Every structure is written in structure tokens, then in C-alpha cells.
Image 1 (cartoon, rainbow, N blue to C red):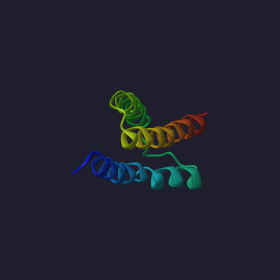
Image 2 (cartoon, rainbow, N blue to C red):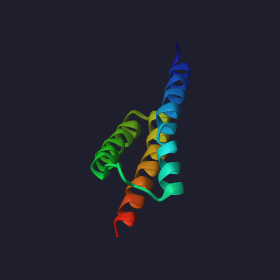
Image 3 (cartoon, rainbow, N blue to C red):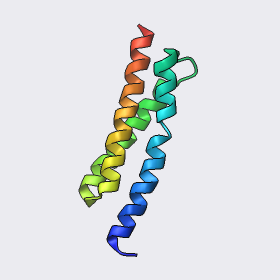
Length: 87
């Protein structure tokens, strides 16, 4: 496999792992119900995603960069909704 094919595999994998968070975002947004949602898990995940984003920039991988920007925004949205709902 050449580097373009490898990057395509990475983009496909990143799409699936990123899309995995979309149903949770919609469920929280639609129901405005955060019961059973762990803020600590999402904060830890957001920190990990930030580190993966840095790693993506260091290795210049579009798949890693794009996936972690989108996933980070989804995580940040969930954390924000949790914090707003707690008030």
C-alpha cells in the first residue's frame, strides 16, 4: 500500500470512530437529559483527543487531524451540555 491508500484507510477508520459519538450528542440535545452521562469520561476523552490532535500535526496525518478536530468538537459539545444542564 502506498501512503495515499494508507491515509484513506485512516480516514475511513476515523470517520467511523468519530461518527460513534454523534448519536450521543443527538440524544443529549433532543432529550436535554444527561442522566447516566459521565462528565469525567468525556473530559478525559477530550484530553486524549487533544493529544491525538497534537500527534496528528506532528506526523502530518490528515486522517488523525480531521478526526480529532471533529471528535473534539463533539466531546466539547457534550461536556458543555452537561455543564449547562447541571446549573
